[in-house]
Length: 269
Figure 1 (spheres, helix red, strand yellow):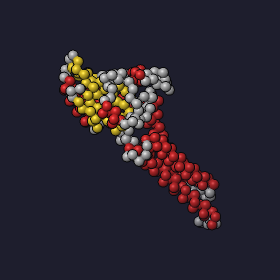
Figure 2 (cartoon, one colour):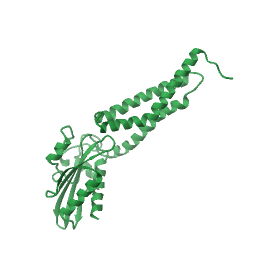
Figure 3 (tube, rainbow, N blue to C red):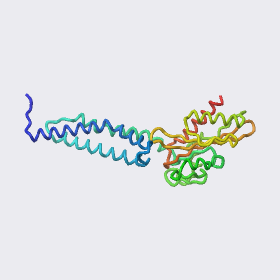
Figure 4 (cartoon, rainbow, N blue to C red):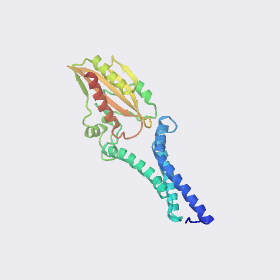
């Protein structure tokens, strides 16, 4: 036999169910909100700080508030209902936040708070005027890795160069045995083009290539410098990758240089 609700109870029940549905909808759309925050940054709709911090935090707060309101309705309004939908409302932000924290916290805890990775201390890979213009006035300043000291965290007091050496010992100059400078340049340029980066400087006579890599999410731009120097028996390639914004790159620049070195060696093969 169906339960007949008085008008007040019916109104409360309907309100609770609407809240539960809204909470579930927000929970399902949580990943989309994070994606919009990232892509909106890439498309220039808001600053990277807003897209990375302000919008995700504000969105999560709103979603959780709605879910809590729905939970309150589930607990106090009889007969019980809306539990599954309310659970979905909580699951969306919790799972999304957990996934993002897992992706960031691991590399972030291991990586030093630096955003400039180089195979030398800066003399060979100092950026040209053209690259500095491309970086813009609001970008991180470019300082020789041996001249900048880390101020916080486990690496505090160490130079960027020393911290890099400890965290990324595999970052070393690439030596192409038996390759003339012009051949090494051609291979490096082909590898850069294969990555889809935007070339800023391509000067075969100077052995210099400068390019800009852009991330899919957020559209963060990191600048890559390659300097090719002839040496006995082959050519030496020094490389550098510098983020335009942010204090820590979570290991992205080191990974980029490792991939670039592998790509150049593949071109050489």
